[in-house]
Length: 171
Image (cartoon, rainbow, N blue to C red; front, side, top):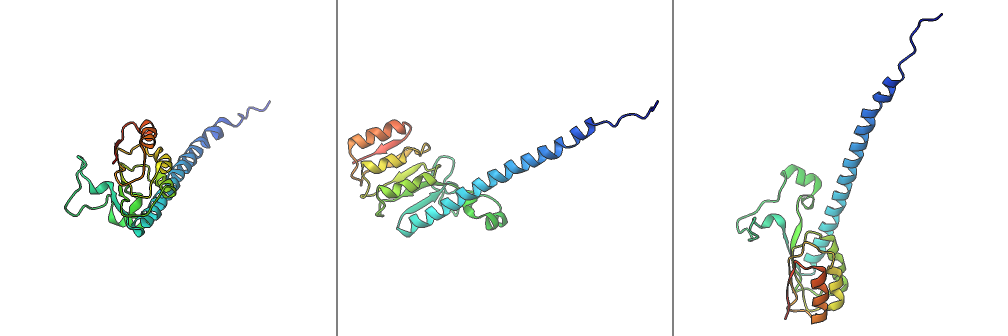
């Protein structure tokens, strides 16, 4: 009779568990990073387009905790060397837009969904009720100025239902 012990096959089962788990975690991290880089790229392109047509843009690091605009030279978050590698938009969000001096109309508002952290928005004369439908996904919007627009009460009521925490100023 052969008294040689059989090989322990359970060892192989556990030996692969940790490398596979590490590979899964690395894949999830790379996926998050790719999504974040794409969001930053879209935000940068949208900001450049808005500034090219005369819009004004403010980012989150330009305000203090109370929401007051910082007057002294605010510095973007993150280490400078990493901002050079990944880009400034990776570390910040656009929180305020002034489009009153632009000709951005209803169709142009569709692109604002690329700014999900937008909190204040000032719109210009080219905006009507139809354009307000594009703002319904901006759940962080807290202030909307429609004083120079052609928006009616019906349009404002529809938007107020979608954004109950938003203060809307109209003519």
